[in-house]
Length: 137
Image (spheres, rainbow, N blue to C red):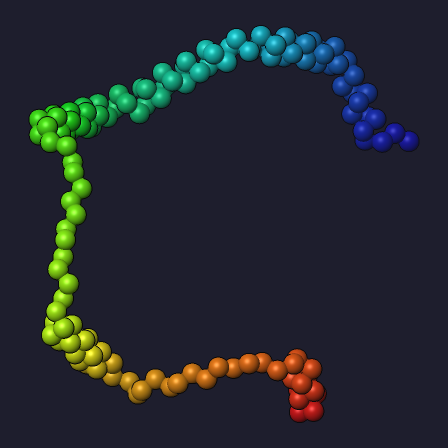
């Protein structure tokens, strides 16, 4: 008894020479397609130009004009940017006391809950003790 695979292969056996010819043409086309890749890149660039740049010409012209104005303003000022160091005078003792009082008052006004609990440092004991306590419970 023939399997379905054998039946299909027997039915399409006469198409093998035509398929071999198609394979040969595909291989020949792929070997010559190395030169065609350059043409594809050019056509891709042209397609991108047509789809991204040309429809938005007004936007691109506006951006170019804005950058030209920015550049012209930058050149026309002629001043080199300089870093400025601001020297501050140290605060006197009275100002420091007043600032501390203000911070304390602000903290009291903003905090409405109970006083925070003092956190105790916790050092865990050996794990075996925990397992025994769980097992006993």
